[in-house]
Structure formats: C-alpha cells, structure tokens
Image 1 (cartoon, one colour):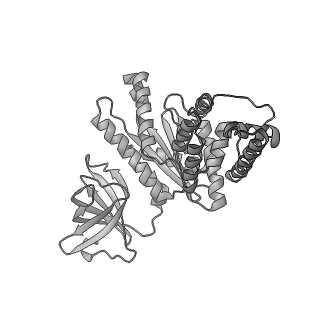
Image 2: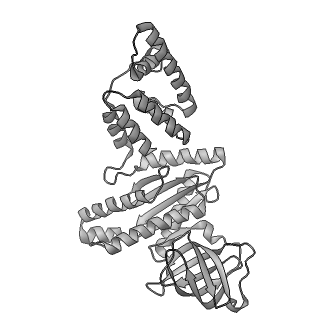
Image 3: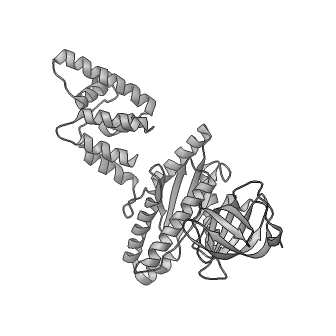
Length: 367
C-alpha cells in the first residue's frame, strides 16, 4: 500500500486536477484487491472507514457530484463534491479544516515512524501486531513475527562511537526493508532491535524471509569498509507459538536470545525444533547441487524426512537442491535451515527436507 499511497498523492497534488487519471488508477488498484476507497478518503478528508463503508460513501459522492452539476449548471469537481457530501450531506465532518495533503502526509508519517531509521516505530508496531492477530483469528490465516537484534552492538558503540552506530542502524533498516513485501510491517522495536510482521505467512516461509535478512546483512557488512556487523533472530508463528501479540513476542524473543547463546549470526524457528522424525548420526560424503551453489560436503545426521549436511558454501533457505549420495542415488531436498558450523569456521550446517513424503534413504548412509 505504500507505493499506492505515493501514486495517489502525486495524482491528488497534480495541477490542474486530473480526475480521469485518478479514477483509472483507483480502478486498476481495486482490481488487484487493494483497499483503494478507504485510502483515498483517509487522505482527502482524514476519516477512517472500512473498505466496504468507504466504497458505499464513494458511490454516494459520485451521485452527489451529479446532483450538484444539475443544480449549479457546472461541474464542481471531485474534491468540492466530496467535501460538500461529508460536511453537509452525511454530516461526518463537523468542522472541516483545509490542509495541504502533502503536509498532512508528512505529519501523519512522522507520528508512526522512527526518526532515525524511517521504519515504523514501536507504538505503530504494537498496534499493527494486535490488528494482524485479530485478522488472522477472524479469517484463519497464517501470521508470523520476526524479532532481530544486532550482535555486539554495545561494543560497536563503545569502540566506534555512536555516530557509527547510528549509520549502522540506518543501513540495517534499509536492508531489512529491502527484503520484505509491501504488505509486511518492518519496525524498529527499540535500540538495536528490529521486528517484522509477516501477514498471511506460515513458519517455513517466515524462516526464508528471516534468513534472507540475516544473510543480506552479513554479506553487506562483510564486503563494506567499516565494522563487521551481524544479526541474530527468532521466528514465531500464530497460533502455534502464541495466540496473542504478547505470546508471539515472548516466543520470538526467547528464540532470538537462544540464537545469541548458540553463537550469534543465526535465526531460529521454533517449529523446526518439533521434528516429526527421530534423527540419527551419520557420516557420508555427498555432492550437493543448487541454483545458487554446488559443492561437496558430509552428512551429519539423517531421518526419514530429511538430512543435515555440512557444506563449505551454503545454498539459500527455500532453495531446492539435488543431493548425490555416492554414484547411484540422488535425492531432492528443500533447504529449510542454514547455520554457521560452530566447530568449523567457514562451513555451514544445512538442513534439508526431503521433497517426497515416501522418499527412502539408502542403507549406506545409515549409521
């Protein structure tokens, strides 16, 4: 909706007004399922309606414009018809005040965004999470919460200074925002903590997003001149990890600090710990091929549903890979987890879920 509001703002500020272009744009976004009428009325008269209510008002505004044309013998335009409708016909506006739209937008935006990073602030995040939990309950939808914390940030501030720390926060915020969808809500939770609300997203998909954010930050600061910066995170999902905003935050926070305790620069997902199959230690050389990378590694453990493989170069979470076990057997898996190997720097432990439910592992890799 951010892009839609920017496009709408440009059309509303256009001089002379181009009502035809505005109507075309509304129809185009409406066909994509966006709540266009509630957004339009919010920007023009600063009243909040559900999309159903807003559309009903919009139809009446169009009719009211026609009535005014007949009465006055001239077209008063969309804005005048809209203001007259709410002030004199529906009585929604008791004391209408004229304010420049761009000024209103800047003022409204400053009330909900963090002044340093430009992400949503803690107050807006809390309100949005409560709203999304209610929506997920009402429509039986998936919902996930990501909580992140920069690793060793206090030390960075103490050794490099707060100006450097602020620049890191601004860059991290930009990297987080670049990794999420328009419907997702990225916020600065406080200090060096960030949070992302992922509507309509279940655990595995949320872990893909969280891992993408972690790797993007890791890769950027590894290549950039300046301090080495990494981030740790926890992922919780509604309703399995919590049916209230407070429980979702508590669950994601606990996983975040467990990720810190296990070595930092990693993301933990609670659903990943509730395994359907027992895992048994194993050791066998394998060749792994993915779109992003290929190489040789070694199986660490196996189950009826997946493999844990150690690799020097890790594929991306969510990627499909081919695993060659010796010369005769190849299985297909999906990457569900990537963590740095604690006992071998430069290597990764990659969790693979076998794509086929009835896939059987060959005897030679069983312990």
